[in-house]
Amino acid sequence: MWKCVAAALSIAGWSFCLSACGSSEGSGQLTLRNVSYDPTREFYQEINSRFAENWKASTGGSVQIEQSHGGSAKQARAVIDGLEADVVTLALAFDIDTIGERAKL
Image (tube, rainbow, N blue to C red; front, side):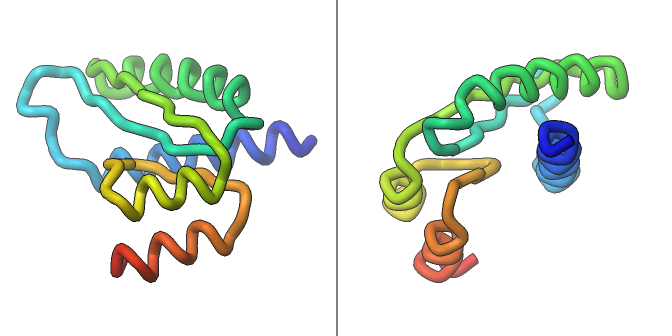
């Protein structure tokens, strides 16, 4: 049950992100970076693959999702220090709040 809920939320998040992203300059290829924490590595590999298939079927374009994994606080610090991220999926709300505060989002 929780896997389905998590998958639905992740897909919804990616959809929101893509609707907010700029164009891919007509190349048909869109690249996104998901900055996440280590325990979700395999989960996002599966979700990213399914999302890319859905995106291709829906839009005809391709999406490549780059993953960056590490400890939640370390990933938050990397984003604060300039690591570009289209999606941030960390373990702790505190880390996400810190990114928002420090990056003035």
